Length: 115
Image (tube, rainbow, N blue to C red; front, top):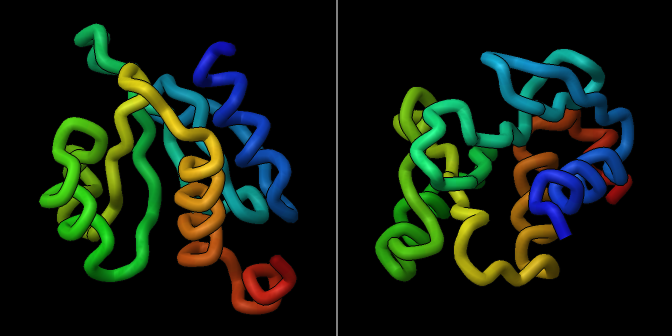
């Protein structure tokens, strides 16, 4: 299945999530305001990925453990966001967990508690 279709399904399943283009890429927002996941193909370097919010320390840990699957994304990496390659073998159950955690980091407390 198309990685964008799969990612979209996971993001839009979360409460009060919307999608719109941001910087030319599909991006998902909580309550239409706060970004929690951004599809990343805008450099058109033949790599597919997404960037997402992550709890403190997660980016460093995952990038150190599996640099072939995770990376520090440009522009938002300094804020702890995680880059996830989608052009390698992907475990969609793991991706669902990563997306859900990104949502929890960004969503208002009451929405995050409802998961």
